[in-house]
Image 1 (cartoon, helix red, strand yellow):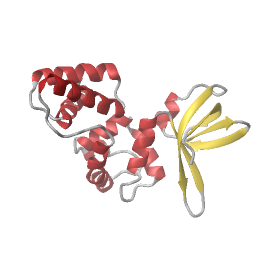
Image 2 (image 1 turned 60 degrees about the vertical axis):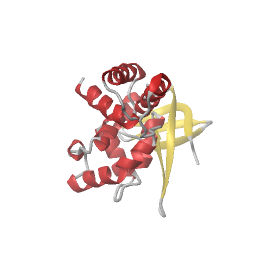
Image 3 (image 1 turned 180 degrees about the vertical axis):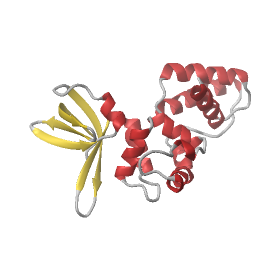
Image 4 (image 1 turned 90 degrees about the vertical axis):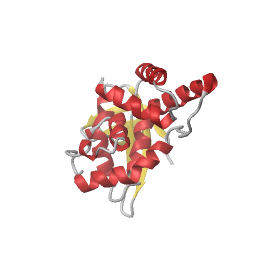
Length: 200
């Protein structure tokens, strides 16, 4: 219903932001990650939004990036994960860290986030791993030759940028991986790159 809100940031609280658009104030729940990226009150701001509808309430959620909103919506697909728990996950880890934990099948990286126990972490990873791969242009098909290598590189770079990593570090990591290995699929390159960036 609402794709985003662009307007004046009126105030910021630990879990919400008030944005004025055309004279109307909108209260959006936000993660700690989004809060850290907000400008000073009085400045113009753009927040991507999600409207959660329940029988007794309508609640807007705001995100500093489209990637964060995508991950929020993905988390809602996991059994037992509602908007508040999804926001808690996004407050506890950066977007790329959540993606990395799920792709690496590492539920322990989600432990300690408020509301996320061992069973919830395991369920998030089990139910969302395949869905996360579908967010990115991952073909899963090995390619050969110069044209294939170029397509492989572009697909892997675009996928990692979608996960929230900066383009410069992603391009360097992917180029190095493709140079060192042969016969890789896009998914293989992404896994190697995640490990490389995580250990950097």
